[in-house]
Image (cartoon, rainbow, N blue to C red; front, side):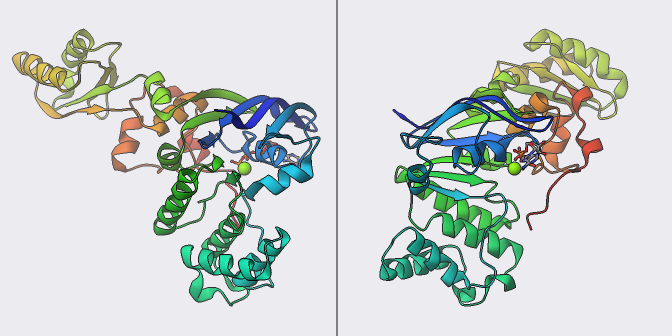
Length: 349
Ligand SMILES: Nc1ncnc2c1ncn2[C@@H]1O[C@H](COP(=O)(O)OP(=O)(O)OP(=O)(O)O)[C@@H](O)[C@H]1O
Ligand SMILES: [Mg+2]
């Protein structure tokens, strides 16, 4: 499969900041690449270079078969872009915004009108279609911006945090729109802070940090790299932790980690459910009472945390089974999420 997007050695500096520090990317035609990374990793900069909005200091990029530095105009005609910050004309209505984009892309007036109507419906904006965009809520602007990016269904699409600021229902609706597009052969590069989104939509994932690519692979490959499946046991009595640790270390496939305050022991395993039964029997035989036991697959959140030392912006802090689980990822010292507390998060509007 030829690459719809290919970048080699992209470097872009802003003063002392190396926003891109030698980035290589390739996205085969008809696939979705999820570009992940903490704030300031260089995701938006990469998107801006690939969409001809920014000239790199060095490196090259080919999009839809065209060199972005040599043929920026032709590249622009082959791509759609939905930016991190919605670019809608405040004074035009939703319908007028979409028709204007259609006409910019040289659709006939009639086609532009029809396309606008379809998209307004699809993005739940039909009722607000004839109001000026300045009266829209943040989520409505976001959806209008996404609709604008889809007016001409270009072969290659770039979406920079497309669902930031959308409520769960609209996020779901957008995912469906994206899945339709991809089923029709569109290639998509998507940045996101919602790892669930990357998990659902992306064929391949690239994790960036400080202008560099620090990992790439499918979601499953990245999860496997983080350590595969783990068994977790919560013992009733804290005094039983050493025995439980010894049992898990013996039956598991790696070092067992103990978390005192939750009375939890975690170990990487390969044996699946059968192994759980064995763990229960062993612990029972040693008189260890169990409050909870289960198998856990690492989530993409675990992957992100262990690679970057940050929790993703979209991940929930505290509460919930996932939050609890992260405490045993084996890299507790790097969990700075609590300290970061979402600082540096930019508002969508
Ligand atoms: N126009 C600019 N002028 C100066 N510095 C910039 C400019 N654009 C980006 N940067 C810097 O380059 C780095 C990468 O920024 P970029 O916007 O690409 O990050 P990002 O991965 O998209 O982050 P976020 O998740 O917050 O959107 C940051 O340190 C940022 O401050
Ligand atoms: Mg960004």
